[in-house]
Length: 291
Ligand SMILES: C[S@@+](CC[C@H](N)C(=O)[O-])C[C@H]1O[C@@H](n2cnc3c(N)ncnc32)[C@H](O)[C@@H]1O
Image 1 (tube, protein in one colour):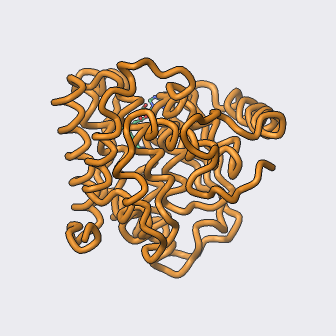
Image 2 (cartoon, rainbow, N blue to C red):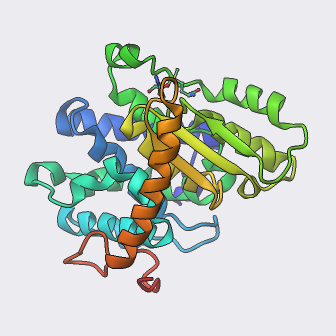
């Protein structure tokens, strides 16, 4: 039913999800405070979506959860991502750090918020590559949750999908060599990479054959890049960093190398990032053994 009711185009679907999320958050949690929790919850559920449109429907498992159980399910989702890619999970930390010690106020109403996202078709959107790559649902929500003056202070105006798609078509329709690096030093939440990957797929090239490096000065934007890299199926050769790429690009190179090494050894020592109390520690891939 949720699949049948979804807006026909992926872009309309992304806008409908972001709109529903923002509407619930502003009327139930008041304004745009706690935006890391609003965006982080959406991101964790997005990562839990099956990887194919004909994959299992997790809706019946998620819809009945209460706040406490939902929080544990989000923790389990990040645990799975931690097993899969510790470095990207570190890059995404601003989206999930609050799960280590959430206050009662932080988790108030989250199960209802999750139901809004699920009923808007978030899982169906993310499990279908053609939909997920049509727009940037995380970027759309972040933009709605930041005031105009906040965005003005950092020049944070993400390029609309229709424009990045045009740029993607112009720049990436020509043959590229597998292994080439796509580098976005001021990536926002990754709008340009989304269009580049979509254009590559349209011309029959797998974006996973390329290297991607997305950087942004804002930690929450960079965290969204790490999740978007998954949603847009950019592959395993993705680096996400947070820093000043315009003034100190060399410092970034060193920082990402060190963080990747730290994340890998930390994951070995601590296979479960967030212990869970009401759910198995890994979800939805319960079978993933700690590495
Ligand atoms: C106009 S937005 C463009 C974002 C994205 N490239 C797009 O087209 O949607 C500019 C972005 O640059 C980031 N930014 C500003 N100064 C930066 C710096 N010195 N280093 C890295 N990122 C920076 C901001 O946080 C913001 O997300």
